[in-house]
Length: 249
Image (cartoon, rainbow, N blue to C red):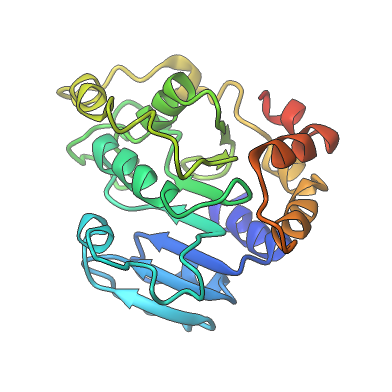
């Protein structure tokens, strides 16, 4: 399954009330959205027809999130579905996650692109290949280590893998105080020491099985209830539907 196919399935199954995208490029992923959308890219060149209520921002993600009310376009400042495909360097992608998580509920879903490089060259911080992931795979390692409260896992999509984070916590302080230390650890000279389990996609979830889970539609139902959804409800839903076991959480 291609990365945009996975994202398209999540749009269809979750029917998000809001969608945030970091890294627009030519707008192909934006064509999947049918809801209120904020898309951020300092150098977008949209060539595809877009069919959503769109606020397109020509800025870096750091500049965008520094605004007083960055999600003013949404009816309420909550992101139901996010797609992070911005600057392919680990420190930028980690910061993007931290900024997006501030505007989530436990029922929100965050997707990262280009998380499974196929070669060490693809994972280089200085781009030397046509397909380029950079070293953003390190972000998933950091989340799994420092935010065990999250349900975070890789997905075996083509060509360069995706990752999904579930049960985010807008109040969690876990990464803020560790950010500088994490950056010092992650930012190293090329060639990168890419773990074999990343290159060989060990433990990466089968995307077909992932989208076949009944969890997504039930998550949308839970999210749309009048009462705020809490993390324990979401975790219980994922256990009951077998999603936790599928993703190894």
